[in-house]
Image 1 (cartoon, rainbow, N blue to C red):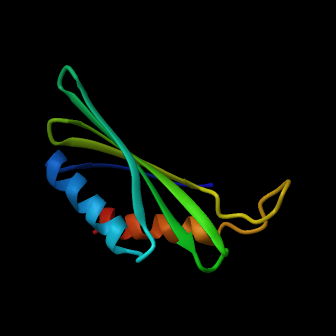
Image 2: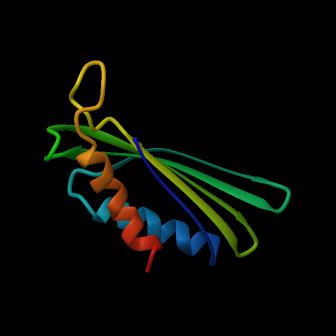
Length: 109
């Protein structure tokens, strides 16, 4: 598993669109598997589940992204899983890290 967490400011809707576009455009095999969005008081939450094929690991990798916003204060947490081929322990996480890097590149700019 690989994890990315960031706190920053921005427009919730614009950031979410940019994240979706960046993840899906970062790999020709990437797909958006499911979404959930809700508001509680002044807080907005968007959850996205993506999946893609990892050439380096010869398997599929999943990434769950959660964006939380209160006004322009945003918190992003993204986690990947599924990049290992071993039965009882993780042999490699290259695919997981590479998938997360597509998101990291967008957020850190």
